[in-house]
Image (cartoon, rainbow, N blue to C red; front, side, top):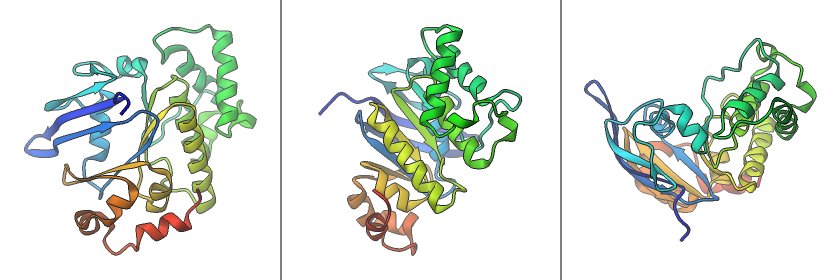
Length: 254
């Protein structure tokens, strides 16, 4: 087995008397598309916050490529090679798409790049994420789909090795969802390990190589889509009566 890109050991997070995460441990293998699922309030976004440094853990440790992330601020973690998106997308509203991306290219990496190089790369990232014809548009003037694509593009501008995607398909119609899935696959093929939170089970079952399930802050299952979809605890806690996830996998795009 290849070395882990990310390891979490006993990660616990308390907010007052509430345990948002309880002794969560897992390992991410490089090169895969990984999914994190669970009901609302399961602790998914809190876990992303712990990994990215915005939500310090109460107990436990996260290691990236063998290095502890304990105590590191978000900008340091980003420069190590971990980037994330947010459920509520917030582009710089009074900057163009090009300028939004140039910020990540210039300041989101361990090694600074020139303004000219950042401009060229911003244009390439915009093209890759379907925003190439809107480089001069202001962040405040974008549609939901465009803002979600810009959120992904801003994360890519930091040159991540691990990309955390928090519900990037929420609010998209079926056609837009299929395009977003294609983009995730394209990103993964460029040697970026993906870890995504998603409620769209069809997308999860078609994209993910490995899935972890949280419920009330605890890990209740992990494994391949087929393994997780058959797990009684997952069916009871999350899938419920939404239908057969294996059928969803067969029906969705590949």
